[in-house]
Image 1: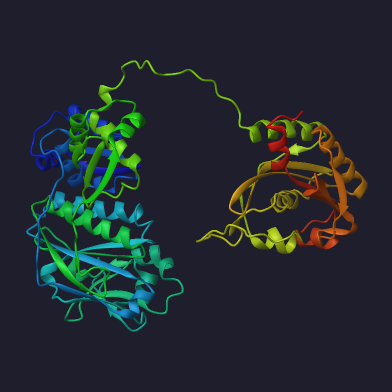
Image 2 (image 1 turned 30 degrees about the vertical axis):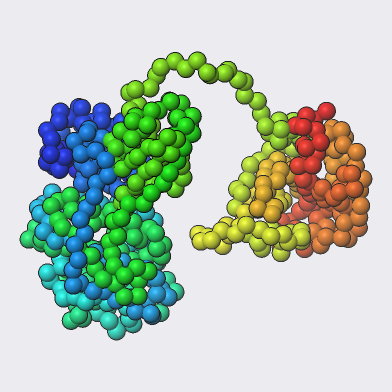
Length: 552
């Protein structure tokens, strides 16, 4: 949930309608917000919205949604986009370090203290949410009258290029900004590994922005500003363009006129492009999904209250979605807006087609619970470990065969770079952290591992003791399989995980489903253990499918 702070008087002004605050709070909740932090009677309001509605991260967006919901201005809000002679260029060199740069201009904006505060808050909320704390995209809003087009987005040497950053009075090199400026220190990690840094310049070489770190002081927006230049840079083309649309339409709600900027080197020739996109869904399926048999008129009216254009021809419900709405990915998103626009206060009538059913555990859940009982009965302690692991622990140290692991695209630490393919490495970490505790230590886990991009249920049991033997772990394995009522056989296992001759495969119906044995000194020491360890790990999936979730 994202908090949006604003003045209630400003909301009324933008709505063009005076509304009792308690009624406004009620309507905001019906749209899908939480107003729990707002003090009734106070002009300062705080409203929370889900991440799927970044177009409402400003009072301007909220006012637009309220006008539609209250019937003041229902349907699709269309913004005129005028042409301009403003141009911007994306140079080839900068595409390697920050590939997308899109911009727009808004003229004649009425910028007072309230509008300025709203503008800054919207920018920061979008940075945190859609922009993933600026790692995905960054937004700049500038005083257009202080710079001269055309604008250029290029890469420069951070140790030689300098300018006066926002909130400062002296020039700094871009490297110094990362070391000395408050925003520079906060986001310096986003420049890690880059030899050159991105910068937006005007025709005279003046700096508008050093994205995603800081704007230049020259283009600071004040209450005297009337014409604004908006830039969005980042790594996701769709998100960058949608944020351009969100910001420019919000500024247009302040009386501004949107003007397009002609681009060279960008995916499109000019921005913003505010043409609505279209989705067509089944009215009948919408009614089944929501639980209400909507008439075509009801569905169209409901979507109009959500700021959408809609037409219905028989079962075909065609929806026109404004360019500032990022949340339409599936037919279900249309159904959701129909449900909200219809009004939560209109639900509640008793349905006669509801059938009472009883829930039950999934087969793997039922089976795993019984396996846990077996292991606890054998004196083992149950653990639940982290699903994330790393290839070194999973394959190199363990000696277990390497499989195609699912990797993490942007891992935070070297310890968590992939999803686990075995349970044993995770349990060995637990033993390592507890090696100063009394022996013996007997632990087990029944949990999912990832194989071929599928979740597979495994059982793993480890014992760390001052003295341990293959006979003990073989006896444990036979006890578990016997309690599962499984016919099995053992085969010699040559994995380096085990001492030669003290490891074995478990086979059921001719298929290898697991291994057990006495760990080799190399495996034990590589996991930083100092005592003998025995292990058992097996795949329970085949047994479950044969047993249909029943142990007997």
